Length: 68
Image 1: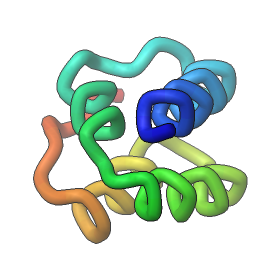
Image 2: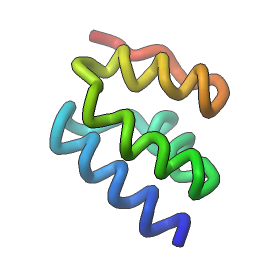
Image 3: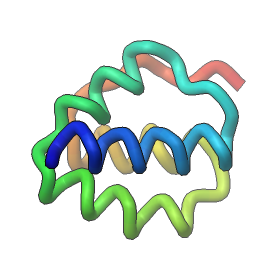
């Protein structure tokens, strides 16, 4: 279930922001299902990759900085 949920979140984020870096993809893939579900709800409100970065720092630990 975790891989399927992570895959869906990654596809939605890719569609919205383009290809994500490996570190961010890895971090999302390693989130527990409950956090991935929260991310799925939250990503609808993200306006930029910075919003994703902030969410992951708050809910999922450290990630590599986003280069805009």
